[in-house]
Image (cartoon, rainbow, N blue to C red; front, side):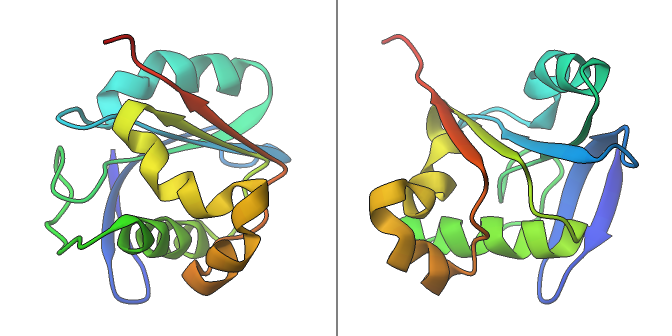
Length: 130
């Protein structure tokens, strides 16, 4: 576990295999924390990916951040990605953790650009059963 200091935000993150050529950013769901994504992260690291697992704002050990909508979460994700200094090959969101990716959908590229999100090669959402 480490703390990364970005442009205007601080992030609490787990990392693995950081020198790998490909990277993945898995994001946990609401009321959870980054440790929920450890099994997923280990599997990606085993497959040769650098893994960066952040806590969502106000979750786990992450500082609070005023969130007023989807775009605020997208801006948060963009700031996180700029802080790790690499464009992820895969963005992976679990349940509520998919909200920051909303602007990264193929039909929302203008929103993604406004949020400062890179054009990740793949963006996946893992829905939760009700």
